Image (cartoon, rainbow, N blue to C red; front, side, top):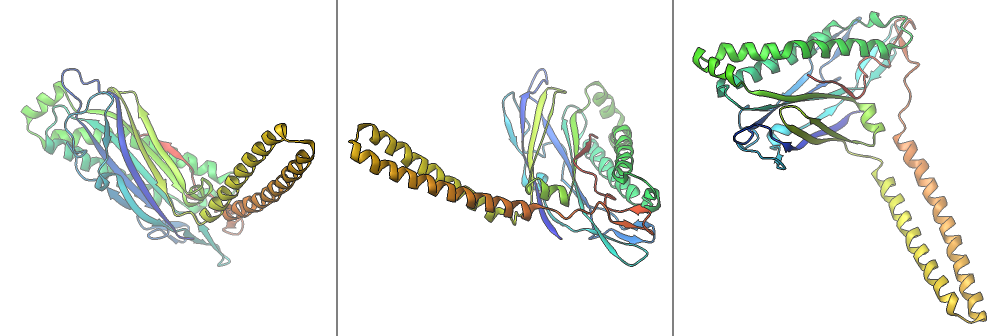
Length: 344
């Protein structure tokens, strides 16, 4: 199943700019990538092809502001914070020529910086060094996977988590050095000396990683937010979304729920009238209330039916028991790690 997805990083809120004299000057680096069947193919027991990347542009002032104060919300420009793509499964084939679809993955990396005395060219050099480092790290990770590593593993998802944890550890430990080296090599010694006194600050970073199945299971919309209490207090907001084929069932359930609320309001009104009505009129009003209660039960049955259809619509066929390589290696969880995988 191919799944169109859209990432939208919408805004950054400043709780405390903490830049001493003057206002803060934040800028944002964004990296979007996907590991899926568009480019990744099986070649024996290895994977070939590279991840697809989209790198947000610019460094200093790429948020279209040069002055942020406490309590201010900064809108992230679409060119920097939005990416649309389509995820498609990676198709693996066992020795019996049976095909196994492995859900495609989307990743979102954000790095929030604050400008001080690094030159524009120096900051952009650091930006490009980070982009290149992450590109190489992820592609090396893909090419380094051997499907034999999962042979006989009882919980292959734990093995994959171990591999991705090592990947993120490497990125965390080495990215800052790559950025610093690039900045130092780009700007002249006198700029570098001044920047050493008050270098640009790394407020914080985050990487989110989701596969197709998780996006579906979480209702086709996932909130992205991360708060950093470092170099002040900042929070970034966004969403990852996909078209929801089950939306018609959700709408139908909402319509029926509104009907029940309206009927209950009528029942409350009739009960109020009963308190003032004659004995003969009370019997008539009670009969009307009874009929309305029957209507509620009928609608509740309809809601239950719609909920079952919604559940069926969002149920993903399990792939846990699928195996390849003569039944020795589980393939379900190859490249299906879920959720946030760490910070840069």
